[in-house]
Length: 202
Image 1 (tube, rainbow, N blue to C red):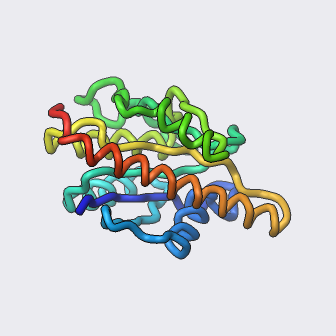
Image 2 (cartoon, helix red, strand yellow):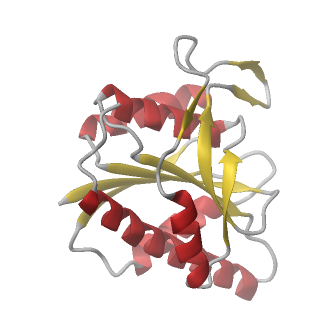
Protein backbone atom coordinates (compact mmCIF):
# COMPACT_ATOMS: atom_id res chain seq x y z
CA UNK A 1 0.00 0.00 0.00
CA UNK A 2 1.23 3.48 -0.89
CA UNK A 3 2.05 5.84 1.97
CA UNK A 4 1.22 9.51 1.47
CA UNK A 5 2.09 12.44 3.74
CA UNK A 6 -0.31 15.39 3.84
CA UNK A 7 0.60 18.62 5.62
CA UNK A 8 -0.93 22.04 6.17
CA UNK A 9 0.01 25.09 8.23
CA UNK A 10 -1.35 26.59 11.42
CA UNK A 11 -2.65 30.20 11.48
CA UNK A 12 0.02 32.90 11.29
CA UNK A 13 0.54 36.66 11.22
CA UNK A 14 -2.78 38.52 11.07
CA UNK A 15 -4.78 35.52 9.85
CA UNK A 16 -7.02 33.96 12.56
CA UNK A 17 -7.36 30.76 10.54
CA UNK A 18 -5.37 29.01 7.85
CA UNK A 19 -7.25 27.76 4.79
CA UNK A 20 -4.83 24.87 4.32
CA UNK A 21 -5.53 23.61 7.84
CA UNK A 22 -9.29 24.04 7.43
CA UNK A 23 -9.27 22.07 4.18
CA UNK A 24 -7.07 19.26 5.48
CA UNK A 25 -9.10 18.82 8.67
CA UNK A 26 -12.35 18.76 6.69
CA UNK A 27 -10.86 16.25 4.27
CA UNK A 28 -9.87 14.03 7.19
CA UNK A 29 -13.46 13.99 8.43
CA UNK A 30 -15.05 13.66 5.01
CA UNK A 31 -12.65 11.53 2.98
CA UNK A 32 -14.13 8.30 1.64
CA UNK A 33 -10.83 6.60 2.31
CA UNK A 34 -8.67 4.71 -0.14
CA UNK A 35 -7.81 1.09 -0.72
CA UNK A 36 -4.57 2.18 -2.36
CA UNK A 37 -3.00 4.47 0.22
CA UNK A 38 -2.29 4.99 3.89
CA UNK A 39 -2.24 8.63 4.97
CA UNK A 40 -0.29 10.55 7.59
CA UNK A 41 -1.31 14.15 8.27
CA UNK A 42 0.48 16.94 10.10
CA UNK A 43 -0.22 20.59 10.86
CA UNK A 44 3.10 22.42 10.64
CA UNK A 45 4.18 25.47 12.65
CA UNK A 46 4.89 28.67 10.73
CA UNK A 47 8.41 28.86 12.07
CA UNK A 48 11.60 27.93 10.21
CA UNK A 49 13.37 26.51 13.25
CA UNK A 50 10.41 24.35 14.23
CA UNK A 51 9.13 23.30 10.81
CA UNK A 52 12.36 21.94 9.34
CA UNK A 53 13.05 19.28 12.01
CA UNK A 54 9.35 18.35 12.01
CA UNK A 55 9.41 17.70 8.25
CA UNK A 56 12.68 15.79 8.39
CA UNK A 57 11.37 13.66 11.27
CA UNK A 58 8.23 12.87 9.28
CA UNK A 59 10.30 11.79 6.30
CA UNK A 60 11.99 9.13 8.41
CA UNK A 61 8.76 7.19 7.83
CA UNK A 62 9.72 6.75 4.16
CA UNK A 63 6.60 7.98 2.40
CA UNK A 64 5.90 7.31 -1.26
CA UNK A 65 4.60 10.83 -1.83
CA UNK A 66 4.11 14.10 0.06
CA UNK A 67 1.47 16.77 -0.55
CA UNK A 68 1.97 20.06 1.24
CA UNK A 69 -0.79 22.66 1.48
CA UNK A 70 -0.48 26.35 2.31
CA UNK A 71 -2.60 29.45 1.90
CA UNK A 72 -1.92 32.48 -0.26
CA UNK A 73 -3.78 35.81 -0.10
CA UNK A 74 -2.83 36.57 -3.72
CA UNK A 75 -4.75 33.83 -5.54
CA UNK A 76 -8.36 32.96 -6.25
CA UNK A 77 -7.82 29.34 -7.30
CA UNK A 78 -5.67 26.35 -6.38
CA UNK A 79 -2.04 26.58 -7.52
CA UNK A 80 0.10 23.51 -8.20
CA UNK A 81 3.62 24.77 -7.60
CA UNK A 82 6.37 23.81 -10.05
CA UNK A 83 9.55 25.05 -8.35
CA UNK A 84 10.94 25.01 -4.82
CA UNK A 85 13.59 27.71 -4.34
CA UNK A 86 16.65 27.46 -2.13
CA UNK A 87 15.69 30.73 -0.52
CA UNK A 88 13.97 31.90 2.63
CA UNK A 89 12.60 35.20 3.85
CA UNK A 90 9.78 36.44 5.98
CA UNK A 91 8.93 38.60 8.99
CA UNK A 92 12.07 38.90 11.14
CA UNK A 93 13.87 36.48 8.79
CA UNK A 94 16.82 37.85 6.79
CA UNK A 95 17.00 36.66 3.19
CA UNK A 96 19.19 33.57 3.06
CA UNK A 97 19.46 30.12 1.49
CA UNK A 98 17.64 27.16 3.01
CA UNK A 99 20.65 24.95 2.36
CA UNK A 100 23.97 26.67 1.54
CA UNK A 101 25.17 23.45 -0.09
CA UNK A 102 21.98 22.67 -2.01
CA UNK A 103 20.94 23.52 -5.57
CA UNK A 104 19.33 26.88 -6.30
CA UNK A 105 15.99 25.22 -6.96
CA UNK A 106 14.19 21.93 -7.47
CA UNK A 107 11.89 21.80 -10.48
CA UNK A 108 9.09 19.26 -10.45
CA UNK A 109 8.75 16.86 -13.36
CA UNK A 110 5.33 15.70 -12.24
CA UNK A 111 2.53 15.98 -14.85
CA UNK A 112 1.23 19.17 -13.27
CA UNK A 113 -0.41 20.51 -16.42
CA UNK A 114 -2.28 17.23 -16.92
CA UNK A 115 -3.42 17.32 -13.29
CA UNK A 116 -4.48 20.95 -13.67
CA UNK A 117 -6.55 20.07 -16.73
CA UNK A 118 -8.16 17.13 -14.96
CA UNK A 119 -9.06 19.25 -11.93
CA UNK A 120 -10.57 21.90 -14.19
CA UNK A 121 -12.64 19.22 -15.91
CA UNK A 122 -14.00 18.42 -12.45
CA UNK A 123 -14.97 22.11 -12.02
CA UNK A 124 -12.08 22.73 -9.63
CA UNK A 125 -10.36 26.01 -10.63
CA UNK A 126 -6.63 25.28 -10.76
CA UNK A 127 -3.46 26.78 -12.23
CA UNK A 128 0.17 25.70 -12.44
CA UNK A 129 2.34 28.30 -10.71
CA UNK A 130 6.04 28.87 -11.30
CA UNK A 131 7.19 28.72 -7.67
CA UNK A 132 5.90 28.67 -4.10
CA UNK A 133 7.32 32.02 -2.96
CA UNK A 134 10.08 32.42 -0.38
CA UNK A 135 8.32 31.82 2.94
CA UNK A 136 7.52 28.61 4.83
CA UNK A 137 5.40 27.23 1.99
CA UNK A 138 8.42 27.21 -0.29
CA UNK A 139 10.69 25.96 2.49
CA UNK A 140 8.49 22.95 3.21
CA UNK A 141 8.47 22.09 -0.50
CA UNK A 142 12.26 22.37 -0.72
CA UNK A 143 12.94 20.34 2.42
CA UNK A 144 10.47 17.65 1.41
CA UNK A 145 11.91 17.34 -2.10
CA UNK A 146 15.38 17.18 -0.59
CA UNK A 147 14.33 14.41 1.80
CA UNK A 148 13.09 12.25 -1.07
CA UNK A 149 16.27 12.87 -3.05
CA UNK A 150 18.34 11.72 -0.09
CA UNK A 151 16.58 8.37 -0.55
CA UNK A 152 17.41 8.44 -4.27
CA UNK A 153 13.85 9.22 -5.32
CA UNK A 154 12.87 12.25 -7.40
CA UNK A 155 9.59 14.05 -8.06
CA UNK A 156 7.56 12.68 -5.19
CA UNK A 157 6.67 15.96 -3.47
CA UNK A 158 4.11 18.60 -4.40
CA UNK A 159 3.09 21.93 -2.93
CA UNK A 160 -0.42 23.28 -3.45
CA UNK A 161 -1.36 26.84 -2.60
CA UNK A 162 -5.01 27.40 -1.69
CA UNK A 163 -6.87 30.74 -1.56
CA UNK A 164 -7.81 32.44 1.68
CA UNK A 165 -11.17 31.40 3.08
CA UNK A 166 -13.21 34.48 4.01
CA UNK A 167 -16.77 35.78 3.95
CA UNK A 168 -19.95 34.66 5.63
CA UNK A 169 -20.14 31.26 7.31
CA UNK A 170 -21.96 29.66 4.38
CA UNK A 171 -19.32 30.96 1.95
CA UNK A 172 -16.53 29.64 4.13
CA UNK A 173 -18.13 26.20 4.37
CA UNK A 174 -18.50 26.10 0.59
CA UNK A 175 -14.85 27.03 0.11
CA UNK A 176 -13.70 24.40 2.60
CA UNK A 177 -15.77 21.71 0.86
CA UNK A 178 -14.32 22.80 -2.47
CA UNK A 179 -10.80 22.49 -1.11
CA UNK A 180 -11.57 19.07 0.30
CA UNK A 181 -12.92 17.97 -3.07
CA UNK A 182 -9.78 19.28 -4.76
CA UNK A 183 -7.60 17.29 -2.37
CA UNK A 184 -9.61 14.12 -2.89
CA UNK A 185 -9.29 14.31 -6.67
CA UNK A 186 -5.60 15.29 -6.52
CA UNK A 187 -4.85 12.25 -4.37
CA UNK A 188 -6.61 10.04 -6.89
CA UNK A 189 -4.36 11.47 -9.61
CA UNK A 190 -1.28 10.95 -7.45
CA UNK A 191 -2.29 7.34 -6.72
CA UNK A 192 -2.64 6.69 -10.44
CA UNK A 193 0.74 8.25 -11.07
CA UNK A 194 2.42 6.18 -8.37
CA UNK A 195 0.89 3.00 -9.76
CA UNK A 196 2.73 3.67 -13.04
CA UNK A 197 5.93 5.09 -11.57
CA UNK A 198 8.63 2.94 -10.05
CA UNK A 199 10.41 5.99 -8.62
CA UNK A 200 12.94 7.76 -10.88
CA UNK A 201 16.44 7.79 -9.51
CA UNK A 202 17.66 11.26 -8.61
